Length: 240
Image (tube, rainbow, N blue to C red):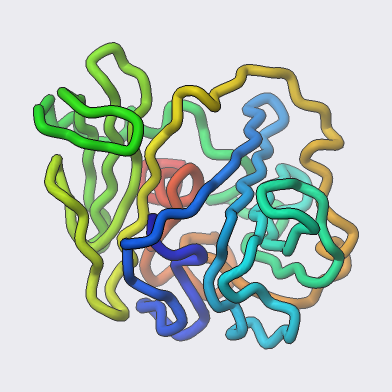
């Protein structure tokens, strides 16, 4: 739920972002902590015309790849939720060797947050009941991570407010975007990944288009962190 990307090039807010939280999307992820790389495939991405590229996505699929050698990029795929690039668009989010975002998010990032305690009444897409809550706030952005009483992940997100177990509501325009996702336990598969699965597409290796994301050690967006679930929000806010 919520906009991706959740940033643009207009400053601390996000003029091009749709702050609504009514329409869910799908995110498919490949992650390898050994390689330090991950690939996040979004079924729908917002208006990225601010990059200045005529082929930028707008209410269409995009993928965000973090490669420990070459940096991070957003590119358009041939097929939604699949890794193969269509060769039409790619922009760079983080430079190679970025000290804040050198690759995949650490597996235990959530343990750097404050343990808030447990609460009842949570209703998510795949689980309802009692939860454990981890929470923190950085530069006016609230971050949360929920797990069940057995320690299984349920939900993580961030935004202008901490929802607890209450229904989420949209943030005002140009405020930090409310974004979160619920983990679908039926889709978790532990498997070995090859280096080829995190190969940076050719269109990205030659791109000069920038879509610099918040929190990088170089580039524009060190002002405030409106980071995305699964990756840079957690790392930038809680010690990388």
